[in-house]
Image (cartoon, rainbow, N blue to C red; front, side, top):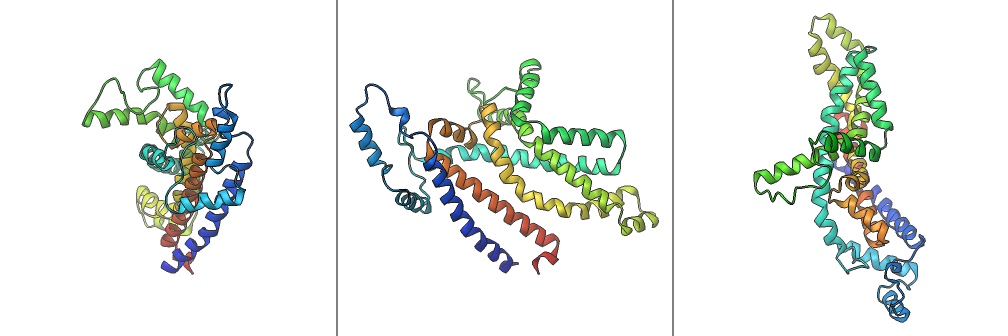
Length: 319
C-alpha cells in the first residue's frame, strides 16, 4: 500500500508544477491591468510606473514566475495590490468558514444521496423510483445560483424560517452555545444548495450499482435461503454496491469546494469563494492564483483519497 501511495504522490508533483505554470501564464496574459483601479485624473503616472517597478510587474514573465513560486514554496502567496494585505492571511482567515460549509454539504450529500439511491433501486419502476429519479435529474440540471435564489425567496422571504444570508446575526450579539446554534441556522440553506448536485449524483450512482448487484446470483441465493429482505439489501447488496461509490467520495471534496464560489456569493457567506469573486472583480491576480493552486491541490488530493479507498476495499487494484 505504501508503494502504491508513493507512486501516486510522485505522479502528482509534475501535475502541480504544470498547473502553477499554466495558472500563472493565464493570469499574466489576461486583459486588464492590476493597477487599473488606482488610475484617476489626480494620480501621477510616474508614481504609477514606480509602483509597477516595485511590484515587479515590468520583469519578464519567467522572472515573475520564479519569484512567485519561490515565495509559494515558503508558504507565502504574496500581498494584495490594494492595501498590501497578506494573501496567506486573507485565505487563512476565511478558510475555516469554507471548510464548515463544504464539510456540511459533503456529509449531507452521502447521508441523503445513498438512502435515496437504495430506495430507488429497491422500488424500481414505481412512483417512488420515478420521483427520486426526477429529483435527481433536476438536482443535476438546475443551476446553483438559481436554486439559491429560489430557496432564499421561499424559506427566507416568504416563510421566514431561515436567514437570507451571512454566517451569524451580528446585531443579536450571541455568545457561547447560542452563537454556534446561530451559525447552524445560517448554514442550512447554503449547505442544501451546495450539496444538491452532489446528492443527485450520489443517488443516481448508488441506484445504478444497487440494480446491478440485485441481479447477482449470490443475492438470489440469499433470498432462497430465507433471509429477510432487509438483511439481503443492507448486509449483502448495499455493502458491495458502495464499493464503486468510493470513487466519488474523494472527488466530492474539490467539487464542493469549487461550487462554494457561487454559493458563498449568493448567501454572503464569508469564505474563500466570496474572496475569489472579489479578487476577480478587483484584478487581484495573486489571490486568484493562490486559490487556483489550492483548488488544484484539492482535486489531486481527492483523486488520491479515492484511489486509496478503492485499493482498500478492492485489493486487486493494488497489484
